[in-house]
Image 1 (tube, rainbow, N blue to C red):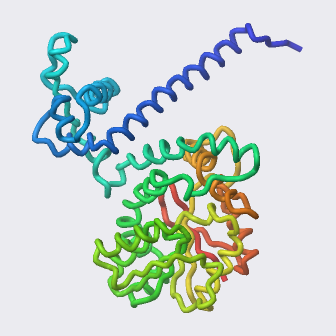
Image 2: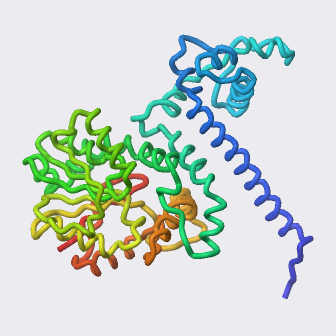
Length: 372
């Protein structure tokens, strides 16, 4: 038997590879934090709206910030490749640095500022920075078995999550995905009623109403700030006459039933009592309504190492979704990585016959019909 100690070339190469990976992750983390600053301070929007490249002084004036900070941010963004530099002075003298002009390259404005583009990934930066604020609370939760709720995570996490899903909910969901499911499409085109469980700030409900002008939608959520935002969003989108939002836990509803379609978009894995909520969902749908669940497209079985999607979802779960579920005991403790067999078990325990995985192709999400 050959013993490999810590001085062998194999061990050294492995250590160096891991150290290099972690160093790259640290650099990427700084990039994410810089994106958060650029978004929240309005830097990207100012650059996108400008007629041409801006100096640090011009950017500071447009955004109400301090020139020295604006200059450092612009230089970092150029160094990391997010911005380009026009008319660069020949040296680093302070008086020259003040005259450097910076601009967004072609295509970058879409990623940083177009809220309806599927390429708009700035909300993910905001979410990551938002949940990072709760690291001390997460440490305590991991030690005590408690949790960190969405309410405790605060506006950054809540608003970032809503913004991340907004392009899907206002675009592809109603324009491609739901029309590909015949019974749902027919019910909504015929003026059907839909209950949107866990509606958040309402983009899924609003997107469905926009796609199906004869349908009516009731959105339900337990987060008061989200419901307030949803009502504002519905009014601004011109669908408040057909979309109503309710601050309510559907598991406690007594006046239920009669919905043609009941949806639960990316929320079942967060629920402390998924079986209880799915039982209520079954009642909302009555004997003939269709129940549609959208949740993360994680691998069907645990495999390590996993792909980027699996790594992303475990990251969400560690920092956000599992702590939220655990914040409301007794909790099923599902977490973001809810595999099909887990949802199948919850559905059967709630009185459904099982689940059908629908032929809807999305990179991040899987669609299920809960079977009678």
